[in-house]
Image (cartoon, rainbow, N blue to C red):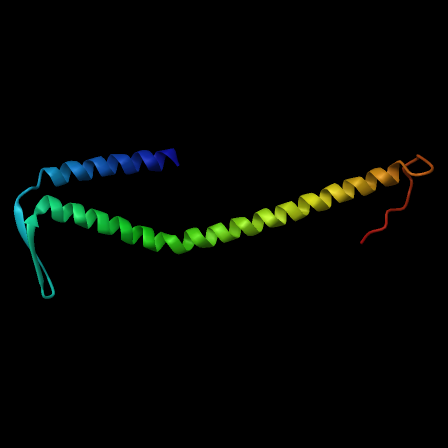
Length: 108
């Protein structure tokens, strides 16, 4: 996690340095639109749009993982409750009327 954060900061810094060194005026044409502006602005806009598109592609898997983690937490809580109940039952059986622990455990 920290390595990816540091890598992102490094790449972001390199991108900003690249953008600041390219400040000439360029004309961008897309279909019927024509935009004239600083190459730094165009590159910065391309970087931001690329980041947004990447986040939009990652969003479904993040949501799926969030639901999967929630289901795992619920299953873990259920299993933990079952374990507590089983230990309580075993404790009751072992401290039964004879005290020998040789009782019969009824399974459910």
